[in-house]
Image 1 (spheres, rainbow, N blue to C red):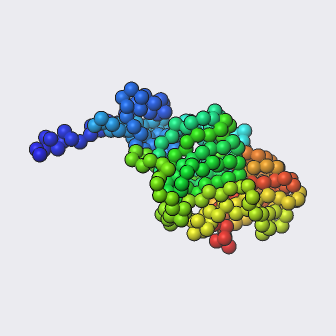
Image 2: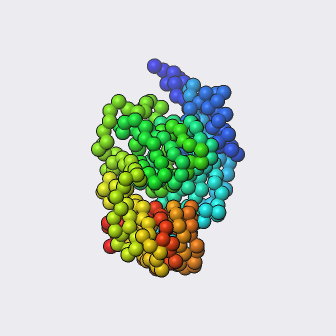
Length: 329
C-alpha cells in the first residue's frame, strides 16, 4: 500500500465550535448520520466527538473557554448547602436535566447532581460507560428502567432504590416515568462518557459477582429492607451494600429519625459527607444556619463542627460518605 493510500484511509477530523452543543449533536446524528462516540461532561456537555462515513467531528461549546475554571485540587473544601429552590436545571446528556448540588465540586473531586426527566417514555440513550472511580444513582421519585452489562434483564429503579455503577460497566437508560428524579454522586467531578457501539444489552452472560475495577454492581431495593440502630441516638439506618461492594471506598445509607430530636452532630473525618433530604425538616448549623426540607442537600467537609437541630420525627435523608463511614474514625 502506498503512503497516499495510507493517508486516504484515515478519517477526516474536524473541530467545530458551536453555541448549542445539544442542537449540534441532533443535527449531525440526523441528516449526516454520524454517531456519538464520547461526550464530556454529562451534566453540562462542552465537548462531544462524533464519527461516521470517514469523518470525525469534535464539537466544542463556544462557551467552554469562557466557563469559570475549577478551583485547584488542594483548595480547602467548605460547607455547601443547596436548596431545592436554588439553581436551575440545565440541559445534560441524552435529554436529561441536571441541577448541581456541589457547585464548588471540592476542587474537582466530587459531583452530586439532581437529575430529572419531566416527561416519561423511551429515553434517547445508548450503550455507554463512564471513566470514574465512584458513581451511584439513588431514585427520589418516579421510576427508571436501566440495563447493565452482565447483570441480566433490565432493572426497575423506584423511589428509595439505588444502583452502584462500577467503573466502565456498560449500561443504557431505556425508559422512565413522568417526573422521574434521581440523585447521582460521582468522583471525579468531570469525567468522560464513552459510547460502546458494538455491545448489545442485555448481554448473554449473567455474572452478578463480576469485578469491575475492584467494585461490584449493586442494585439495592428499598422495599423490605432491614433498619438498624444508628450510632447517633434517635436515628436508624438501612445499608445499601455499597461499602461492601467498593471495599469501603464509599458508603451509602438511608438514615431516618425515630423521634423528634434537638440536635445531632455531623462532624467526620472522611473526605466528604453528603446528605440529600428525602422527608421531614431540620435546621443545619455550621458557619451559618439553614432550614432543610425535602430536596435540599449539604456537603460537609471533614473535621468541621456541623449540627442538625430541631429535627422532625419524620426526617429522612440519603447519606453518602467517601471513604466509607466504616473507615471514618
